[in-house]
Image 1 (cartoon, chains in turn red, cyan):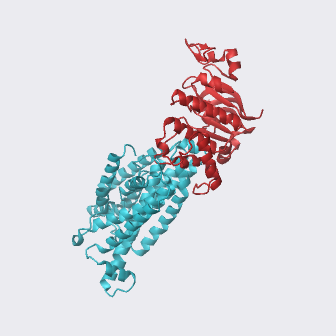
Image 2 (image 1 turned 180 degrees about the vertical axis):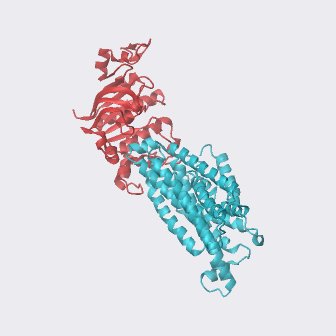
Image 3 (image 1 turned 135 degrees about the vertical axis):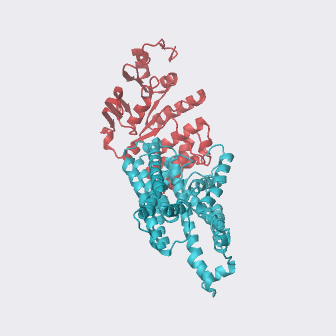
Length: 251
Length: 340
């Protein structure tokens, strides 16, 4: 399998080391969940991998090349990033919001051509927002808005999509819908989807592989492997929480 | 809630209102000129020399200045509000007017300190404009120099406000040590005025504002992305530093030039973008930039007309009128909408 993303002894941080060392990879067409306790650096990892934030040391390879060798616009062709809480712009139509994903392909005024227009509409259909294109994006429900941000990232046509806690503020039904949608996107469109989450059960059921940012060490592998190894117990070290292998959750 | 896309009707209504307001602006003043005379004079067919003189030497230049100032300040305010995601941002939030004020204060009070009295209003006016522009440009230059070291736009905002405070403090210091006549000259400048600009000055002002407007149109694409947050903009491959610089340069050209020639004119730059958002209900800058330009022109011309109302007994300072018109508008917006 083609490795679209690879990290070698990556150390995160700005002025000081926050977390290290991470050596992991992502293959084309797989969905990966990043799990770990609050404040361990999941957001920092995703932002560093998508080039929004700098990192301390180590290497990030995108399609086999150093991330620093890409220009802003070339990197945007490879990577898209969905922040944990996207700003809602009042009175911005859903179409206009999603169409900004075409940034690198639109004219100087940011207008989309006919083929891009069709692409935006079909992407809205894809995420289950058919007929919503003229709606005010700021008045969508949290679940709808999260799907809109995913559509915006899909329109960017990047191979790798990072999402920072895409299901954090959603009810259980929307959590499932979004996770299923992400796994469909990864498998059907052979993109790599990497997202951080606190929902272990959903991650174990729907993801191809999981990266665990444990308090002591970093580990990664398929859900089955990690359960076998007891890797989830490294997540909350020295804590009364224990991972239940049947329930896929901490008790 | 749906967002509309075509706005031909709205644009034509505002354009028509702008036309009427300009006509009203030309009619009213110390002498009332009937519309018939105005059209005759515009067509070059008026025999009344005093009408021609009042119109062409005073009222038309003043109307053009007000129109330019309204367009420039409003378009500038819109960009500041989007850049800083702050509904209270105005063209002067980065200290441009304080910088311009410092320039003028140094010029007006500095000369008197050396015992030189400035005679000849043309030299004085041009000197004031040049020093105001230099002050505004100086502030922008400082901000541009540090902007690459600042991590986000909030830091930029804080830096700009601090810079403005320093300039204001220096102005106060200069005021404290200056003579009463130069103090008055400075205070009159801060009240704002559209009258007394020669055609040469109007040309210089337009030559600075038009590039600023062109640059603003060129900023539309990035402004629309900035609406959705800096992290998203960065992930799209938007060069944030470059964008910030372009918006800053546009701001100096627009607000700096207006301040140089007309003084620091408040409230329009903050109020008009909100009025445009309220009327057009669309956050897209392709819609908002022309909308703020048209509305800004109309409201500024109206403000100037109100300032002329005392007729024979003189002119009210522009800044008092713009505050009296602008403040109720801002209050209505705050009361009517749950969030801006």
